[in-house]
Structure formats: structure tokens, C-alpha cells
Image (cartoon, rainbow, N blue to C red; front, top):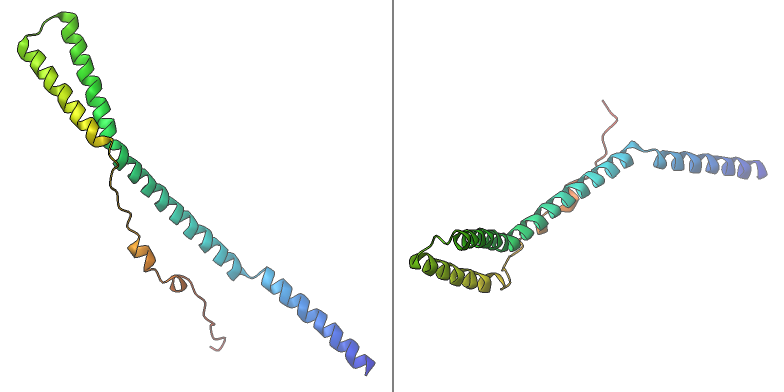
Length: 138
């Protein structure tokens, strides 16, 4: 009986070692890890692009107003420096100032942006990657 138990224990050790070694070095696990990293990277890229879109939507009107106002200020400085203007020029400058003031009121309001994630909610995640046993019979 002792020899049977000893052989059983020896066989158990061999089975444990073979199972552990097989699980640690299984190339499928490495492929799954690579797939996971690739999916995470793609998601990060999409998220970064979406953040940039939000930033562009929120800041585009502010940037345009700032650029237009700089050009206006330069034009006003040139008119003042050259003293080459008439009453119509002054009226046009006043009109532009009113326009800038009006635009400023609009851009200080929060920009309404809607985030659409409907398609990502429809992803059937367990169908993106799965395993199936192949038959060894040929």
C-alpha cells in the first residue's frame, strides 16, 4: 500500500508541474494578452480623439473671436496712427465693437455638446474574442 501511495504522490507532483508549466507558457494566453493590449490602445486613441473634438468645439468660437478681435485692434491702431479715417470708419468700428460684445455674450454661455456612446453599448464583448476547441482528428 505504501508503494502505491508513493507512486500516486509522485504522479500527482508530475501532473501539477505539467499543468502549471503548460498554463504559464500557453501561447494562447500570450495572444489574449496582446489582443487585450491592442483593444485598450484602440480605445485610448478613440477617447483622446473625442477629447480633442470636445475641446475644439468648445474653444473654436473663442479662438475665432480672439483672432478677429486682434485683427480689429490692429486695424484700429493703424487708423489711429495714420489719422486717415472718416466718420463712416468710426461708425464701422463702433458697429464692430458692438458685434464683438454680442459674440462675447454668446461664447460665455456653456457650449452644448452631446456625447454619443450608443454603438459602444451595443458591442457584444464576449463575441469579440472567444476560443473553441479544435479536433485533433484528421
